[in-house]
Each structure stands twice: as C-alpha cells, then as structure tokens.
Amino acid sequence: MSERTRRRKGRRGHAHGPPAIEQPPFRFHRRCVAPTRVVSDDELEAVHEASLAILRDVGIDVLLPDARARLEAAGCTVSISDDRVRFDPEMVVDFVASAPAEFTLHARNPGHTVRIGGDNVVFSAVASPPNVSDAAGGRRTGNLEDFQNLVRLSQHLNAVQVHAGYPVEPADVHASVRHLHAIADLCKLSDKAVNAYSLGADRNRDALEILRIAHQLADDEIDGHTIVYSVINTSSPLRLDEPMCTGIIEFSSRNQAVVVTPFTLAGAMAPVTIAGAVAQQNAEALAGICLAQVVRRGAPVLYGGFTSNVDMKSGSPAFGTPEFMQAAMLGGQLARRYGIPYRSSNVNAANAVDAQAGYESVFSLWGAIMGGANLVFHGAGWLEGGLRASYEKMVLDADLINMVATWLQPLVVDDATLAVETIGEVGPGGHFFGVQHTQDRYRDAFYTPMVSDWRNFESWHEAGSPTADTKTAALASQLLAEYRQPAIDEAVLEEIDAFVERRVAEGGVATDF
Image (cartoon, rainbow, N blue to C red; front, side, top):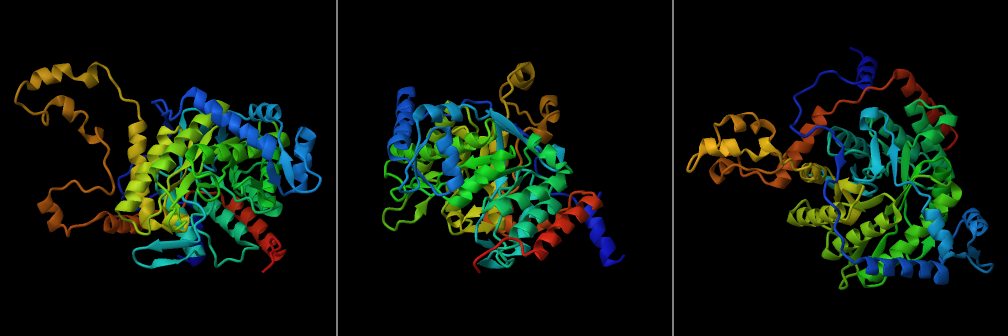
C-alpha cells in the first residue's frame, strides 16, 4: 500500500481498530439539581447595581474606533479626549436582555453538535498554553506535533465535547499562518465543535471560511448556523482592546458565538475582595455582551466568569481556591439573572500531575458545576496555571469529568430502584451479589473509572504499585494508539487544503516579526 493510499484511508476514517479503553460514550449532560446560591437576592442586586454604576461613572476604555462609534450610536457617551466609553444603565439592560438564553453550537459531525445554555452542561479541552508536557518528553515549548496529538486525544476522549482553541500553541508554525494550519487540523483530525481565537479580522474571517468549507455551507447560510465560538478576554481592569473588539464585531455580525470573559485576579487586576472583583468582572462582561448585541441583536453570547485570587506573598495567580469557587458561583448567579449561558473553568496552579492538581481541579469543577456553568472551559488538560498542557492531566480530567457527568444523571426513584422485594428476598445477614436484581444491573450499575485503582493493597503491590501519574501516562499513550481519524469527504479535504495553501502563499496575516 502506497503512502498516499494510507494517508487517504486514514483521512476517511477506519472502520476497525484495536479495542478501545473503557470509557462512557459521548453523551449530552443536563443539570438535574439547582445551582448553588452564594448570596441573597438583595446582595445579588447590589452587585448588579455596582456594576452598572462602574459602567456609568467610570466607564470602559474601548480601543477600537469602530466599536466606540457603534456604542456611541447606541446611546453610550464617548470621551473626545481618550478611548473611554460610559454606558447608560438602561441601555445596558436593554441590549443584554436581547441575548439568547440558549443556542446550538454545530459540530462537523451532527452527533457532536451541542446545546449551550439552559440546563445543558458542556465540557471543553484545554486552550492556549504556550508549553506542553508528558511523562516521556517532559516540559517543552508547544509545537505542531503536540498540538495535533492533543487534538487527537481530545477527539478520542468522549468526556471532551468541544474544542477550546488550540490545546497547545504550535509555536513552530509562524504566527502569520499558524491559524490556518491549526483550524484546518482541528477540522481534519476531529469532528467536534471548534473555537477560534480573536486575533484580528483576517484571522476571524479565515477561520470562518475553513469552517464553512468543513460544514459544507454556502456563505449566505453561515448566519443561520453557529459553527464557531470565540473567547473575548477583557484587559482587566476596564479595557476592551482592538483584537477583542474586532472579534466581537466579526463573529457577532455573522451570528457566531462569543464568550465574554474578564480575567480578573482579586488583589491584582481587581479589588482584593471577591464581591468587588466580581462587580468589576460583571461590569466588563456586560460591556462586551452589550457590544455584541449592538452589533447584532440576538447574536449568541456567553457570560464568562474567570475571577480568582493571587498569592499575596508572590503575586502569582492561584486557582482551584475557595475564593475561585465563590466567584464562580456568584458569576453563575449573575448570568442566570441576565438569562445568558454561563462559562466557568476547570483550572489549577499545580506544576505536576500530583495531588494538588487533583484537588484544585475538583474544587474548580465543583465551583463550575454548582455555579450553574453551561460551558466548562479548560475542562481537560490544564496545568501550571494555564502555562502548560499535559497529556496525563487531560486523561485525569476526563475521568473527573466523567464522574461529574455521572453525578449529573438524574437519580431514579421507582419500585425497581427501591428494590423492596429484593431486600426481602435477601433478608437479614445475607448478600446481594447473586440475586437477579443485581445480575440484571451489575455491568453498568456504577461508574467505572479509567484512573482510580480499587484493588486491595496486595493486588496493587503485585501489579507494580501504579500511581495516578504513571497510569495516566500509559492511558494517554494507549488512547493515542487507539485514535482513528473521523471520516471526512475527500472533496472537502481538498477544498480546505486549497484555501489554506492559497492563504499561505499570500502570506497569511501581517505580523511585526
């Protein structure tokens, strides 16, 4: 078989492969319990009013002239001496109210299309670290090979429902054309929904065109299908820079989703109190959401919460802290008040796949889930405060996500599950292993983890005393070996490749290096 034949066969996908690691199937999650409230209704209104006062009296620096002009035409006050925009509270409330409570994010494979908002909960892979690590190669600068492998791992792990940008930055591909290769690879190596960065209008448009081809839509059909989402980070405190404003305008104008996410660290870029930090977060989020609705009423948006605290001894960011949980839950209350889908994150500050990475991620996940998050960003693979993507952490997080997802399943209470007759059959002093009730259910009665080791000490010791870090390393390797590229039409691949080749030949986008 020639190399070209092998490549084409791989592109079309394989019907058969090695036995897969046992993991729950790709599934959709709905929250069956009410999110946790961390403040009273009166206190929530106080945060809301404080945010409106910040927007009215202090304002936001909006660095893109086009964005300032649009906001001024919609009723904002724009300073003639600087970039400051002040927002009329009634205008903010009006425009924010026009954002949809739910929307559909389409994947190339309709079976992986997800619903964002309402009671839906969606988990993404990690996004944007400059570095990557695995047990075999250690820590290193992000590169295209690791980028592609992490996309493959994200595709094969059913716990990961959508991509979140680049799982690691492929720094060995020049920034002028990096987005072209990265988005094309996301479409070729995976059939899950895609995130694209907002780093200038040309990159926005290139990403949308590659995704249009992958989804086989006509240009005039894009506005009716949300096929990409983009995170819009404010530059805290109180600033929207040009690339982020451009991203809002480019994507919202085409009915694509933006996730407006202030990155507010209490004690550094925000007040040291959680209430003050979230009030600032809320003001910045409302400003970005308002701009999206000014661009196109009804365009899909998410309210992004990413407030944590810093280590006041070193100034380093801290994640998975009690304060992070409080901020995540308060952000969720605010998003629900506005009727907007909510994004939170699975984050940690650990430098290794160790106990700290585990317990900080559990805290983050619990803050996100109980805070009512509809999108749990950085769901799998985040390490070192976001500076590193980890193969082993991606596997560990997938197990954590699957545990949370199992917990999210409704607890069924009926005659069959109450098992009164079976309890009577066994009676005092008996056991339930052999009864028909157990035999009918034991195969899928409980969640089976990939990583946790439930053997007794003697069996575990005889097996070499494996720990979570060694087991996740082996699992990551096996999952990559099992990966099969999802099917995609050859003509679609050729059209994507032709577009990328043309844009690369044109030089991609201008850079200053």
